[in-house]
Length: 442
Image (tube, rainbow, N blue to C red):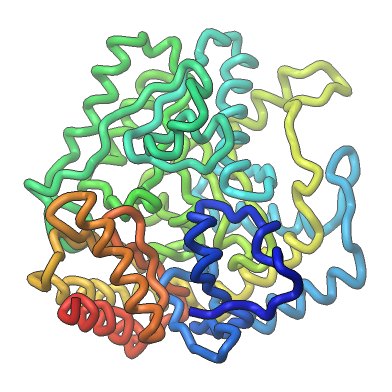
């Protein structure tokens, strides 16, 4: 592993790293110093094929020249402008471009700086919407077991990953959780969407009988649950959630922080599944990871309800961030969207999906592999007879792949994969052949 040049005895100590075992990392530090296209380069020149798009986000590949140029140009022209009562053209231009590719009816964009902020924003929008309609008693949020919606108090409360919550007490009241969709007994090694499990959505109906639908503001789910290990929704499951929410006056929030911007071969997962939410969360791929940015694309109904209910001259939605719609982020977002569309990256992702799927499922039968899940350019390789042994194996696979020049991500007992959308067939084969070789070697 690489270590940086030393500039003082405590040069690794000051940085408190996120979602990282800091003590272990600082004993065996891994550093990358540059990136281009599909590859990272470490401080000693080791080349790493990026199998995870940075962190689900570098959809256009690293350091794309058009995105780099747009950021450089914007930094020299307008470095910052507040979005509080003041505007700059790029934020409006980017919002218009986003709504042009969003599902029909989603036509207003509220900018944030991350997926975590997008989650809290969407939840506050849902609460404010019902308050404006005179149904302020709708305060309950329903998430899902094994769901991940960032680390803000709202998103964390709605999420369903226990290890992320245990240090922080009760969090926000009023959150409840549907069962997850992972059903290995019936759906192990499914290619694409599992055949079984649409009826799992009916648990929402049972919950509404318990809590009373008139108290529920929103249901929030990831179309494909990413951070928990790539859980693909069964056929008909999301459609059933949409039906139940519509019938009961509940807003449906789709967290597309991971699945947005071509990850499933379409602009959004909503397009792939034919399910339009009331609020759609975005981040990560917005700028291809080049500048932090997030957002919520809201329906016209939600926007009009909130704006028309406020007094003249009043702030209609008391929410926002200093860096909402930041000029550099908006420039990067516009450039990234131009790249996605002009270079046909959404279409390319769809075209290579069958290759990705076939290569992933070739791992079936190898030592330690207990399940393989895939959709679009996402895959989860579940390992080990139990979570504890699988977690150890996943860490070993990561370390061995790193040494062999392929970057993968271990999440508990699962190797998750989500390469840049520019990935070639040869690079896909390299990713999975490396994993296969490592599993055989271990």
